[in-house]
Image 1 (cartoon, rainbow, N blue to C red):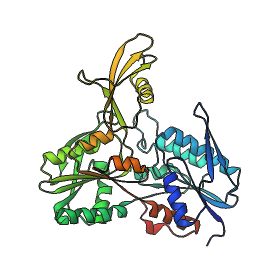
Image 2 (image 1 turned 120 degrees about the vertical axis):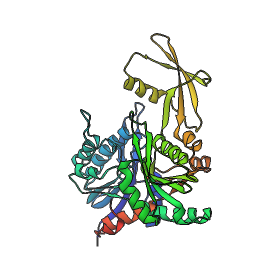
Image 3 (image 1 turned 60 degrees about the vertical axis):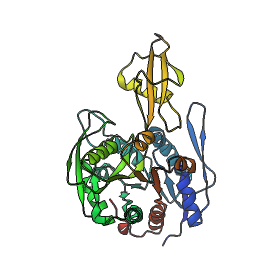
Image 4 (image 1 turned 90 degrees about the vertical axis):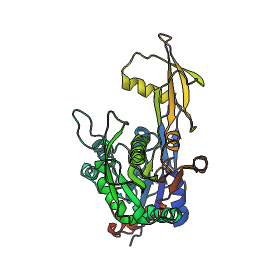
Length: 384
């Protein structure tokens, strides 16, 4: 039992989740205001006291992982001043997960993220479907990750029924060796016995090349499962390989739908829709990429080409911004199913309804909140 008050807060991305949770659980809504200054600095402010309360902060690291991490730090400080009973962070999509092990002289980003949660006084961190179980070892405060596989079961059952096939006609496909363990769990959860694994290589970050398929997808319906869908490169390559090996239809089931836009050099046939100026092209590849990501932005779902002119040399270059939504829609993939760890607007879902389905994990979040608040065991929730 718990005699403390229960409070649910959220960052901007997590508001849709928090509103639904508060509505279902009969809680007060919108108790935090995050002021934004013209230079993008922020100032979180609690609208009322949360003294002696259990405060749950739903904070997916999207669309700007760096900014959301800093925001989480400042919210923790605002809460500290109000003296809650416990502070629980719920990054439904935990950013920086893909930098989870040492590779040469690179940073282990997730370790620094874990240290940030610890140093800011969070009592517990509950996330959804982390990229790698090794992430647990980065945390020195209580941390859990929960798998959403049971929420896909209903959709898979409907998919099998609509196809007039049997579950024996479906095969679960892991898009790389690292996802084989999750794919096996997913197959058990949805009751599909056939299993295949793709061996891939990554020429560079955000790029993937499917090389070999271990298993049989011929004359079967392939369901590719993974945790993160970013630009779509991995699953599109995997889908093409499945198509090449004779799969009848191809579906993708992902937990976190990021749907990033990819910047590439435009070809001569692509007409620019806009001219944009940049200070200089005279910088290294990653610095230039950061500048291009900052200035080339729009909310559409079709490729858009820009003429980019350097202020210092007047050199012209042409770049195309290619949305993941466009690449997926024009791939062999019949449908993509994601959860709302990164919740999408009604407009977004309507615009992409021909190929995209969003499955809600709100019941899982509510169960986590209830069990933590009332100090009940979390073991029944299938921790990762």
